Image 1 (cartoon, rainbow, N blue to C red):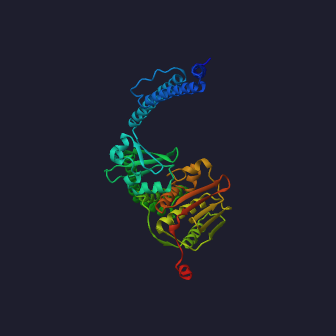
Image 2: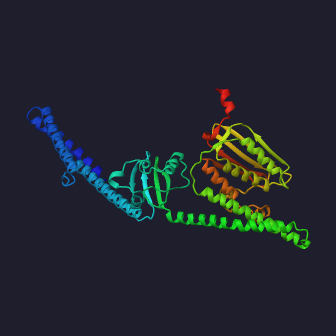
Image 3: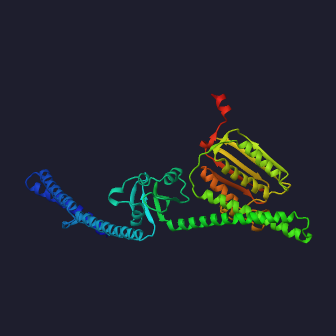
Length: 440
């Protein structure tokens, strides 16, 4: 029989014995019911004493010993003691786990900040304190955006797209760059991961400077070489056997000139990612110009269309927008056969303005689409060289769109063609003055 069952049988027997004893004593004095009542009162008083002792021990169990009581009360006290020991054991394990977690996060080379659903700081490690200049006594409980007042970080939090980190340059540090990435978890809680990327950014700056300087220095010699090759190719005294090689050299020189021009343009765009303003642009007129440029090629798709669904204007930097749209149309023309077609489209809806270029070319495999905007990335290197592609056009498009707060969307089906769409925010749209006046 279980100890708890034995205790209850013992309590029942004691109660029965108390009742019989009270009745017997009362019967001796001729008042059996009075004797029963007195016995039950005594039994109840004993239970109250045990209950008082239990309550007093529960309030002072940190330093007082458990009362030595038998029966049901003793079994209850034993259960409480076991629960208390189990709770203390799990508490010690939890404290050890927390300490190990704190020591491990303190040893991390990156900063870690724990934020609640309101983005208030709950905890941070030593590296985060050093990188973000946080103070444990003063900054706990404050919102992270009130401490990091960087425009790039504020936009990052507002967009709520945490798939990629954002790089900021704090005003407190000289030549210091920090990479910040938010990782949501739990019930609205967030982890802010902080790492020092100053060395990578300095190396990137050195690389950009080298590319810009090298491209600038190569431009003049290439111009001279191209001029001599053009003169040589037009010389009637040129041997017929040399006509082919000279023509090929001219083509390669023109290709290298185009690469250097794109490198210089990309270096200029990479100097800053600040959003530009600009003036209202007549996108339908720009599309008409781009269509004429395609049709002026020696080889071009048979059908080149410009579909204008809105006469709204786009606010932006005209040379940069022209460069981005021209690169998209140029890519479509290069990779579309003479029997194929190209369609440019411009439209405006509730989400903003959109410019797309659709072709019936060879298409792009799905696994290559995320890397299309990397510099010098080619899906088919041999075909790109044959068409004169530099691998920089889509990188230029990406940077131009970033400077205008826009995004590039790529949809492609292998063997059926591709659609490249530029999505501009609604604040970049301006209705023509005549339409605004008529509406007013």
